[in-house]
Length: 236
Image (cartoon, rainbow, N blue to C red; front, side, top):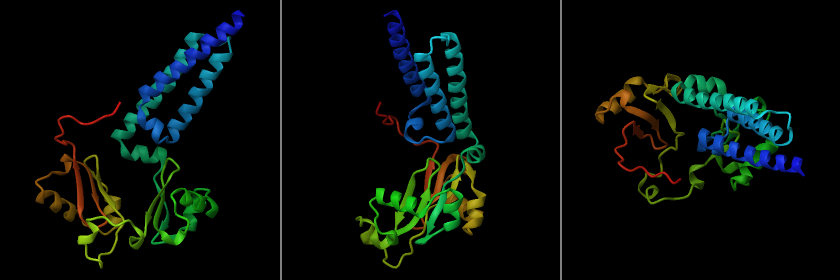
């Protein structure tokens, strides 16, 4: 009877320890699990399960091990925010699977993905005809992002004022965390002077910009570090 009680207490303790760790690591871990977060989750889960049923594992040893992996994951998350190249090297980058309505077979093979898998994920996006797709990207978390062809996209009030002859372009990221993405500029033949002139016209400096993207309609979207929002909404 005593053994059963010990297992019960250890199991409950393990559950609440994991709850605290998940809270520390934040919401991003739950919504978009990347490589290092996946590894951390597997290891922490295995540790907690062993602690619940293996009485030979000392509580102190468990706390040390859990602390090491929690701190490691937390530090990596902060490094990813500060050093984008390190994040890209560690996690990889999104892969274009379809461009201009065409399937990129080499990119499918590089990601060990079959055409059946692509069609399955498209169906989960309520796309049953692959001809509807303009762009499809495989995100680093394994999810598929899809942009339909222009004529098949839902019409908004803004669309009614657009010239029907406008060509739909794929959004191009130009600035992240105050730094120009030179590779994106070069590959899309966008001169650096263009983005700088756009910033100057808005009385902005490069170091003031957190994020800048050339949107589908060719306009520049900017997000500053200072959002001037006094009471940002965060639903707990």
